[in-house]
Length: 454
Image (cartoon, rainbow, N blue to C red; front, side):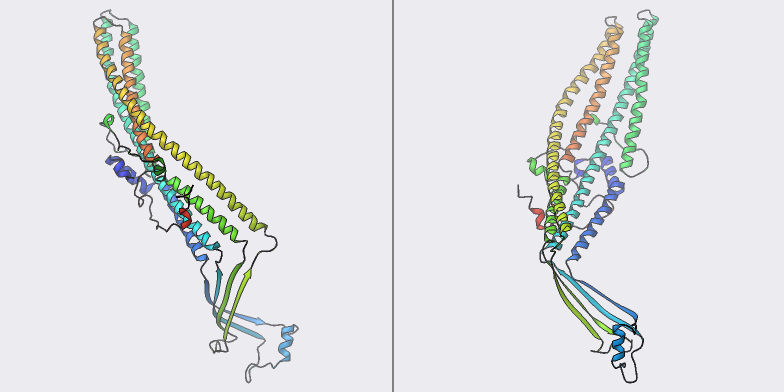
């Protein structure tokens, strides 16, 4: 339940994460998708409200005299006022407002609105999940980079020791105590480790550029502190019940919201089988001349109508829509179950990994200490002609590998803490992430049906 700034206390790492949450391209793309979902919510909110439009129009009518309407005009008094006949080309000026409202008696429109709200909240959880993933990936790569730095330092120190041993072996050869074979074996070992240096340096470049990419910036040196890596430890993970832990995961919450939204989609699709009631009306002014347009009540025009419509024949499209919504709801159920199962397994694995890596690191540290002492002992025995040069060579090689493995194991231990942060839901400030804030919305009642159910 703590934020990532409290979980990751390295100031260089927190600064890098803050930069990434502002500049990361994938996160900014997702922010725009959230805005699109928010616009869809606004659209569905207005669907169940009355539509009122207002405007004006002007036109010209010419009725053919050889038509029923034209013959009727010829047979009546062809005069609209004293001394003024009906013109052949009759203008038509209209100023008014139209009203149209579909009454949502079966909650079809409101269910569509609530489903859109749930999906919008789901996109919010998707953003939260991406924020957690970005934070975890940056932290994991950052600790890998520090591990490479420490491996590089260990390798350089070992190369210096091996160079000193090589010079000592050359003196032994000059005194005819060893052969050229010993000299060449030590030279080969030095060259092998020197070559290994460049491989680690390349890994450092790749790790730095990966961090720069996640931070949305061009390649540059990543500021970091590599000293004290062997004593580095993250915040202790205090866990509760597994079900409580899973509720902290944004992907589980998003799957839950999507499942609730799919249920509302089924209800909205079923409502299409029922009759729909709509009310329409118009009110305005209409005249054939601008001078008489505002003459009341002669120019006043209005209309009102109510329509009750129900599908009777050829309802295949409605049935197909309902069947599709039902199938998508079943798929959402499976997706939800799959997400919960995956989250549970990830949580159990990472918590076990923290415990096992901690014990493994303690034993590995004892091995490194024993091999470090054996290097000094092997060297003394060799110079006193009580050990072969191969024993010195193999002891140095084993000590180097154990130190490199210890650093790698420490990195895996830290990685386990990072993965546990992600598996447990990733504590963060919900206002952080991306280049824009999205408003919070009230969760429809349907979204809570799963929380207390089976």
